[in-house]
Length: 183
Image (cartoon, rainbow, N blue to C red):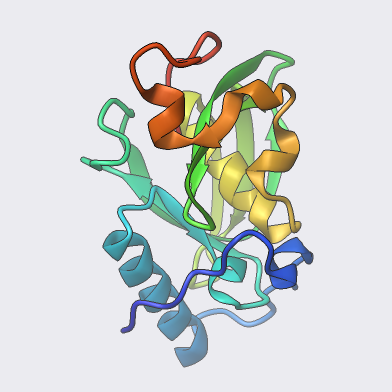
């Protein structure tokens, strides 16, 4: 296992659509997932997509237990999701703070569906099919955006709510008029 370098916003690789995984339960896929888990853990991330470490595969991992970057976030089960498909379950949208390991030190208020269904495969080719809401839904949407070459700043509707974390949340700053959680 290895902690991999995380590509940062501005790297053109992050703007590409990743390729489908065609073979499951291979040594290469196992190694990729181990590296992603170690990298995500080392960076206190809530999730990580393979393109963030320079791998052109539709693989995301996510999970939150007790994370110092997200002290008020609900728990999200550790999940390895391959070739995901997301379907909104309602038209309700929530704007909440998001951050990203590829956009270090910054946060933005991003609109997301509050309830989604996601399905795909695990590393062994077994089907995953879940309907989720809240922080869990936000994390999945954020990570799956990476597979389509989308970084969260492109989803921000009001750029007054995008900036460096310290400036946004210091005393007397803009704060968070729209949202209650961050991802």
